[in-house]
Length: 284
Image (cartoon, rainbow, N blue to C red; front, side, top):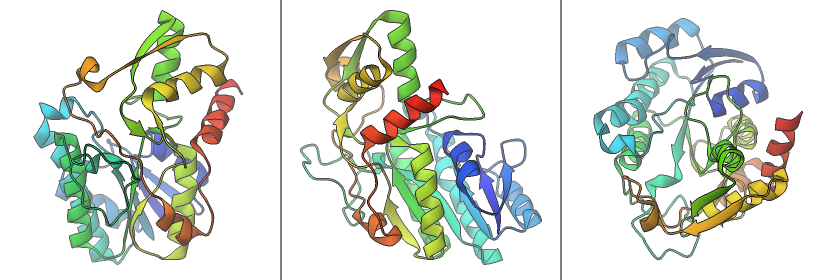
């Protein structure tokens, strides 16, 4: 199998390169401009893939408030160009979306299912939801996976991730203030890459939620990071209002992944286990 991997140098792309079977054809920014229909239309047919995976995205949530057009170009129009090109070639397409498509229900106390109505709160979130809509309309043979709090090793430095940021701030400051009223599920890129490999082998197209199991707040996650890393850091809980980010975030974007579990035939492991493995791998 020949697999085109768009965004191969990012956190998920790096993990996918290590987990996918067959021949990987990595395409980075120098090889393909996902927001340019002509670039996509030239690069993909030339690669002659059996599967295309898009792990590229505009992930600067706060900056997107000032650059909504750029976010929409990369997160929505780009995936549409890829989906349409895949349709013309008859090739399945894997696209990655975000838990941030939810958020309008402020008092949510249950995990979000794929069938729940989305409600994005920010320019970034709207661009991710629009990307889903355009991919679904363009090509039925798609796998769309919404994930949350992704972290992993990357070939390129990119944006970084929450785990690495906490470790750095903990070393530099000895104290951190972290939001404690936003519920999420941190997800290891290595785990997500494995689920993608399993899912595409089933041929069960559609929309899926894909995170490690369990839930926590960003503040409690920070505490677990330091505990497992053997670091003494003072973690101070603050509110979303205290933090004052430019873009609004969901108060609860925990995802129900039972549909994915049914498709691939096993439970998704707890976020604590995945975090422990990630921290251990950093020491190796």
